[in-house]
Image (cartoon, rainbow over all chains, first blue to last red; front, side, top):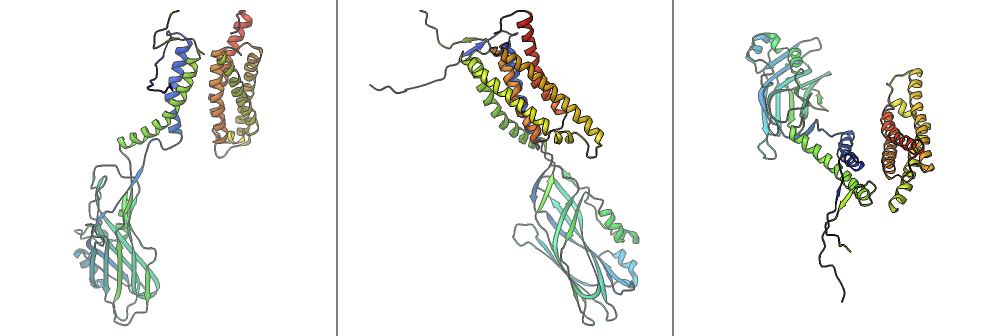
Length: 309
Length: 140
């Protein structure tokens, strides 16, 4: 008759000792060495506390149909300008030149968020005038929802100048978010939900580009129109208007934020426990060796009764 | 008997490993000394830190002498508690010192390794010396 193992179970052996013994000292040392070093290993290997993280979101951007255009029409410093602000247009006097503007925002992937702005601008220029430079300021409303809710008003600034008079400027680029400090992981942020250009002000200083850009760049959250290659076309027919065509894309942004308490704890716990498991295994083997072989004297209590002879 | 027969060679091996690393650091201590100095340092500052480290390493060698003497003379060769302590201390010292060399730890970290992994077992060894030769106790 062949034997086979029908069932097995581990037997628990208890090792007893009194308080002031080497075995107690050893047990305390093992306890400390098991639970503290994993913390040191996890901490010293960097990234234990997650201070900064990122997420992706496509912002909700709407063009606000407000703009400011300044064009240099001679190399001597003559200019014409136009804006959507009546106070500024009154101040401009004879330098006011009204262009034809058409703007269209498109949602290309039908996800409910607009993806780009198509702007066409035709500025009538007389045959004596030549266009040397363009400064165009567009305002947008910008909203983020996924982690913290951010509502703000932002700018896109297009500036191009050339020593050669042109007939057309074509710009195509992204409206990128610039962050100085990471966003919090929740909450509502409406600090920058104020007009970048104060359209109600009757003073010329409110419409000065230096003031506007200077104030705007002080903010933690700004947008910048990133257009690496503007195209300046030269050779304008007499009486033909100067054309500006702009394509402003609203890309998916990578936004950095400060993680909340539970996200920090979760990642720290994962790191700690995964290192701790190795230490627990190693020290279990060491303790097995020490107690089974009675390296330190203890009293083993066997789980089954000893047969007395 | 089987326990002691495995503890003795294990203790000898970890002692040797620690000794080898300490001797190696004598040659390659430049990086560690630089690690605890600011970016701009004078020759004088460098020498000061360097001498501190050399002293620490030399004292470590002295403590090795005590422990090896106790080990080979039989004072603590078959003492399982001292064997266990020595094994743990020198094993962690070897691991720490290899990190010390590879990761260029600052030179002051050596003092912690020195205190816990060299001084501690050597002190116990001295106690055993006194117990065996001074108090005429039988070595375990």
